[in-house]
Length: 130
Image (cartoon, rainbow, N blue to C red; front, top):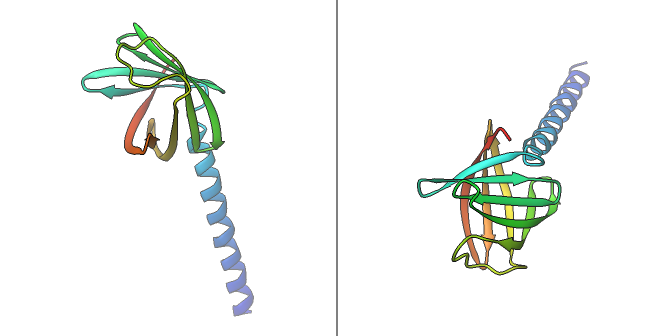
């Protein structure tokens, strides 16, 4: 009887853990699709809009933009392929690829690691109303 109870308890804990881990990771990362976010460069806000397959950053109150295609690698990782930019002195050319991995989501804040040209940095963005 004791062994049977322990097996049931073990199964319940394993099942609950698997459900929590898989559903929270997918639900957390799905916050990106078809939503708007902002992040700061110095003291200036940058508005970011995610579509299903397009990503646009707006700088200086939408005076300038950077448009990229999104290639979703997993629910929590994607590549941005730069297509067009009107941002003055923008150092990257059309076709440049940046890889982004979502590290965690906490409320409206998304923490991520971006990699480009051998460099890597951690950043965060905050969900805003469209």
